Length: 413
Ligand code: GLY
Image: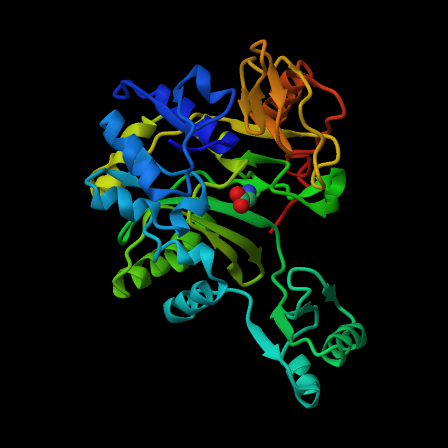
């Protein structure tokens, strides 16, 4: 297992439950993965180092968790060295690594996504604005890329922001607004074979009620009581399969986990983004629901035999994961504090390290996540928050409303 987050800890625990798995190693892992696998201090961005470790261990299967080694071609190097590898090639990983590549693939595959136009000439601004709206998404595409985003139903406000960017010499990116609740759908993909996992929903803002800045994800739940099963089929048929087929057509077949981040609007699913790996923290909840052997599913994907895999089986009920973040996250997090209760049931480590006396210390922004499962969302939430209540970390914070809007029936299509 390559990686060191809560996602990788959840994958390792899932693999550990598979009776066909005999031995687990993590590189580099964290303080939690050490109790289920042997941790190895390896630079995951170094293909040579990862291949050397796989050789030393005579690994039967290498699973790559994060996007960075995938985009850098670590899966390619492992396959060239003869290892069965779960994770796409560097070229296929461009579906996450390059927005332009992803848009191009989606256009060729006829997949709905935000339409985007660059405007760099003020004389063309009004005509371009007329091609968007009534909610306008205006992004400063200059040096403030990623910042300077205005989302507004007011054309004059959209125009003012765009004109301001252009006056400062920055091109403007106009995107169509994707309305509707968000869904993360993870699919095992082996060429044109696509096997969806349970749909999940992430909570990206730091505070309750979606207040405050974006984070890597503060919690998630699965399945989605407000999403009909037929909509999952539509996502697979209208989004995931056409993209998988397009990548095959281009000679860059995808092998691994394709993560479709979607907004479900009045016209159906539209892609917000693709990722080339499992999502964090959704994976912690989704894999807790999986009854089928995880190792078999990952190995079938890696070996090109996913089409022969028996249908996945899932536990009844629901699972919820809540992230415990360090003080000041998503800013520069406070680290180095002792954590009490970090090895309790349902606790998955992310930003943790082992101290000199063997104690567990905080070592990152998203420190750990706690999973609960139950007969329904209410019971799953209760277990997750009950378990989280046993964990103590000075200055830490978490959202109290993960899955709450769905539990209360406040999300609808
Ligand atoms: N849950 C968001 C991500 O994994 O990118």
